[in-house]
Image 1 (cartoon, one colour):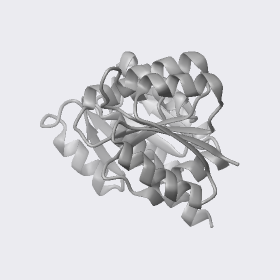
Image 2: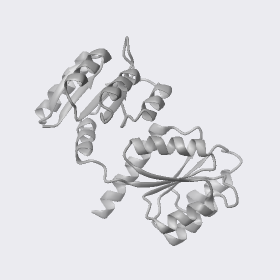
Image 3: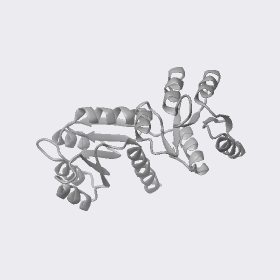
Length: 248
């Protein structure tokens, strides 16, 4: 039986969630604070943990760090009703599976548990950015989410990698040395018409024409820096679900 731990200082919320999840066949424990959650993880291995970010005494991110020191393979989904982007980013960098925003949709919770139980099939993602600090941070977060990730710093290298491998998603910075992101995308798209590309830039006005042209040529979307990793994870999940639907 799949074991789940629910951690939220709103005890009525976790009690309600627990009743529904137990009815659906899950083994559920609940607690209203981070210290108690840490003790429970020391005593029992959970398949999945849902952890509120904003809690008194010890917040969800600090709780997650301590849980990870006990069991580095813990699968944790953060929950929040607040705009706490810094804590969200920190949680994702630490390897949290993702973010669920309140009010909680219990079917979304069930879906997350079932998806994790089935495990990811190892989507392959290519990140192209001449800012290798950004690219490697990007890579670190995505690898912790279970994805296979390749990183390169220029368009020529990206084209070479992409033509030799099948990628599920390409993240391409618009401003690259020698050959820009749009040109890189168009070369790859010519060889692989079904490529899903997400453009990125920190220069919204300066490269607006290139962004528009990329979108006109079926780029999926454009993200503006500084990147919001919770949004990126949502996009990846959305794209992979669509691909899975098409393959069926």
